[in-house]
Length: 222
Image (cartoon, rainbow, N blue to C red; front, side, top):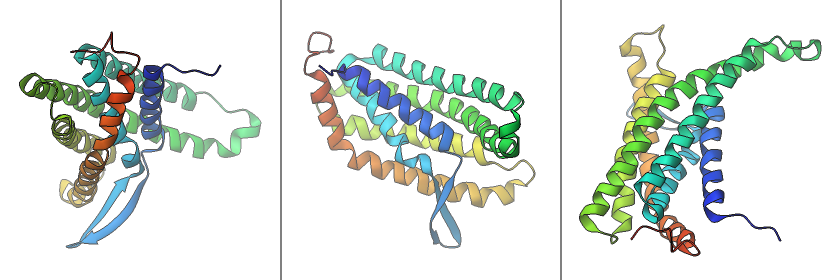
């Protein structure tokens, strides 16, 4: 019979979201223009909030140590993507793939910068998310999951967004004055969208906690 352990499935989803954001997050798409600012967002907006929600679900059910272990695993995945990107772009192509080599290198060499930026942002924000979530839990106990989830997500997502966007998209050949409108035009809507998605995903945090607890009552933190 086909069967997957619940925690394994949750971690697999977590790793997928990390890999998708690393490999595809370099693309931004326009949202709208307001007060002269052209607001854009990375395509990773659709998976990043899921990462923070999974962090909270695992922390709620299994505790801080288990959640930190999962974050370290994600950190390791990003590091492996960076190292393999260096290897993949350094190796010479076979004759059949020579025409597409420049496009391949262009895409995946950019992925290296995205991954390095993400590695730093991920390390800062995800550990912060677990820390804030568990600190609030220590003060309030098991009640108000919605508050713990949203406060920890919103604060950590601001750190994640500001760090990642600045490191990933700052144009070194342009002045700060030229970079700032573009970066602010991504950071602000990107963070606000993350906040919005964090709020609408709150019911899924409750569902995820209840789903994960079933069958894992003996391992769940009290």
